[in-house]
Structure formats: structure tokens, C-alpha cells
Length: 361
Image (cartoon, rainbow, N blue to C red; front, side, top):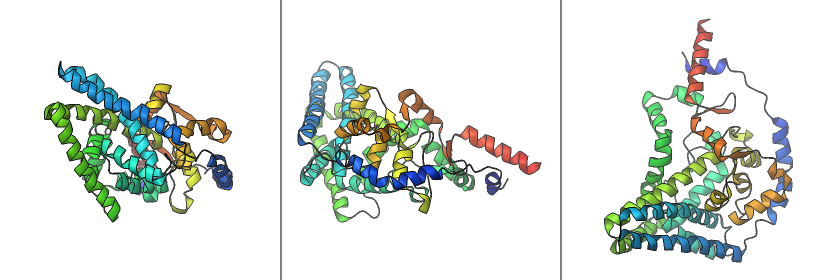
């Protein structure tokens, strides 16, 4: 079967032009709505740092005490520390957007320190993440700061090796367990093509700082104990973080567009989810579930996102995704550009079979 044959038999649904037009005309209104929530509050920011970093440090101290009795007593503490590291990453993330503190210098300083705790170079990540915000939902600008997603047509035209690589990367075990470790422990140790001098320097200085931190922690805990516990912390934090990012941009009804049809506001509202989590998980994830608002205005600090959502009815029109509903995202593999939906391999095979039968009729 020719790859193009599959596309021919599919019916393209009507585009929601009215919604897109309305979003564009109301852009100025949304900017007005979010303006008052873009103001950082130093007191709230400092309180968030204290109630996150201090418990994280205490958990590592508790792990030191626990291993004097048994290494396994430290494991639950390491798991909890992984949860707090997610929250530290959100603080790091806000500093990267310049939204956590009013002072740019304070954002850069805290972001650099938090980046060391998260094994992520601040300036380099900040540069790459800005590209993600400028291109989220744009099919023509995939590849930076996103999850590898192929269209049906691209998958059909890909070589056997590329298909195997894609299926491997999109496997849940790889995507949510192995990939986060590779990303934070290996990938973030290197610079990207196109990175500027400041971004490259941040990678090298972060690597140096990590060596110093690891040496200090190893002297306190022992190398084997430190590596074992740090791997648990990073696995929990990395897996949770990648899962959150995945659900924020891979969900039923998600927005993808090409070129001139792509719209920033529409990509925020329809290309970023409202992930409604239980309060405890919302706390650990730093309110990042209000991702539709965050993508519309990255200048809103995480501690203002919920208030913005509750105060403005337009944000509440975005359908929330619950924890249970988010599990459906595990089956998504490919973007069907003709029907404008994410599909799984089973649906893809059914489409190919239908196309084959149609071509033989």
C-alpha cells in the first residue's frame, strides 16, 4: 500500500474557525485579565522556598541517620525527597521565566542553585524552554523541549529503523523511567547546537558544581549509599516530571497546527491541559496543572496560577483532566493530521487495514 493512500480515504472534519477567530480577537482581553497575576510576591516566594528546600535538606539529613541503622530505612525518605525535588524544579522553572521574584538577579541566583539540585543548567535550560513556549502545538517547529511525536504520515514514510526507534522511545517504561534518568543525568551534561556562550558556560559550571556536591555528599554518606539514594530521588522526580509534561501536551482534544494557522493563544488554551490533581499532588507539583494559564502567560508565578484560574471564568471553560482520565494518554502514539486527533497503534493498524481494503475494492 502506498503511504499516501491512507490519507486519501480519510474525511477531514470541519475546522473550528469560529473558536480560533474568537480566541484571536480576545487576545487583548486575556492579556488584561492575567496582568494583575503576573506580579511576583516576595513574601510568598520566600515562603515557598522555605517550605520546600528546608524539608528537602532535612530528608537528606534523615537519610544519613537512617543508613546508620539500615539503608532500606532511607528509601522511603528518598522517595519523599523525589516528590519535593519536583516542587524545587517548579521553582527553578519559574525563575527561568523571570516570574518567581520581582528581581531578575534574585531569579537568576535562585534558579542557578535550584538547577544544581535538579541536575539542570539554568541558563541553558532557560533558553531551550523559551523555544518550547514559542512553538508548543506547532507541527512545523517540533524537536526542542517536547516529547517526540510523529504524524501518521511521517510514521508511514519512516524507515523500519526509525519506526523501531520511535516505538522504543514512546514505550511507557522507557518514556517515564529510563528517559528521565538519561535526560537529567546524561543529556543535561552537554550543550546543544545553537546555544550561546552564557548557556554553554552554565552547563560547564553546573557540571563542576555537581561534582563538588557529589564529593561532599559521598564523604557524608559513602559513595555507594549516595549514588543509590540519589538515583531513587532522581527517578521519582524525573518520572513524575516527565509524566506531568507529557499529560500537559498529550491529551484528548489537544491542539496541533502548522505554520501560519498556528495561534499562540489557541495553542495555550487547546494545546496545554488543565490537569486537576488532588490537593497534595497539586502542592508537590507547584500548581503546574494549570498549564493552560501558564502557557498563555509564563510571567505568572506558580503561586498565582490557581487564583487566576478561579477568578476568571474564561479559564474555567477549559475542560479539566482528572488523574484517572490522564491515564488514557498512555495509549497515544501518533498525531492523525487529517482527523486532528492523537491515536494509538491499534487505531493506526485499523486505519491501514481499512485503507488496504478500500484500495482493493
